[in-house]
Length: 194
Image 1 (cartoon, helix red, strand yellow):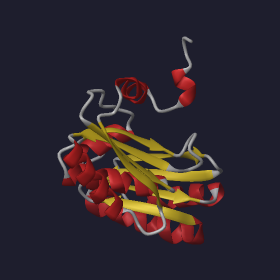
Image 2 (cartoon, one colour; image 1 turned 120 degrees about the vertical axis):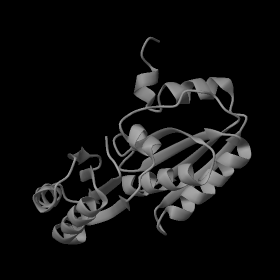
Image 3 (tube, helix red, strand yellow; image 1 turned 90 degrees about the vertical axis):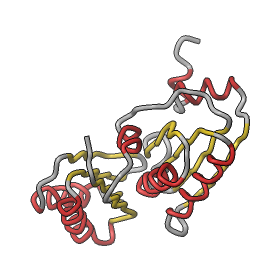
């Protein structure tokens, strides 16, 4: 469990990402550190712990990473639903509307997810991160139309300029599409059992 702070750095270099992760964990006492490669040849470092420790570790990673840092996010009081979604939890209750935020980086998607769920009465269906997306991130919200519209706008405002790919709000999402999205967003997993 990551509380109360979370940070993520997206590196363009795997080698520099590994070096930075090592510096980060040496710099501060962290409760959680997860690292790994994602497509297309990038490296992600996710950390969690107390606000001060995460902030110090993040600063170290950004310093060592230098020009290889594509993006980063620091959430000193991350919403618990964001932590759950990062861990793979999914909301499967159909609602009135679906909101989608698509970003160029995972860090931007996490930032958008946290801002939107804190700012509006919505449920976080999923945060999809990098793999199978060419390094992009996707956030899916569900709720009443007005709430989903608000969450999408708030989430998009949290994304740094140039990192937003698209945003959509779909009212009265068709049950067949809801069924597909609530089961999984990866196409390959939807083909099992055909």
